[in-house]
Length: 116
Image (tube, rainbow, N blue to C red):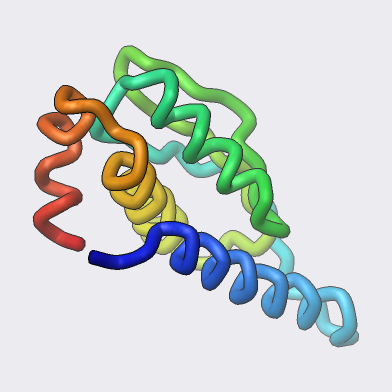
């Protein structure tokens, strides 16, 4: 079993390196935007934990969350591939469900858990 904390720390390191490169290089590739990230579980505990983890990562901030349908709206500074942002959010959701999810959360996130 993977250690969720190690995965989160790994993502934080990668995002810090990307943002540092953006700051210290003369050319700018920042293109901010808001990405709609559908979630599998509507658990307030899971949604808020994923939103808080994303807020720790430089260049991302959850600006809205809905439970019906379960969705996070994430503001990103370096808007590369939209699917990368959605994949990151889905990965964080999977890790959070593995760490603190209820039986219902596991059932809702089962496709994510099978991917991981």
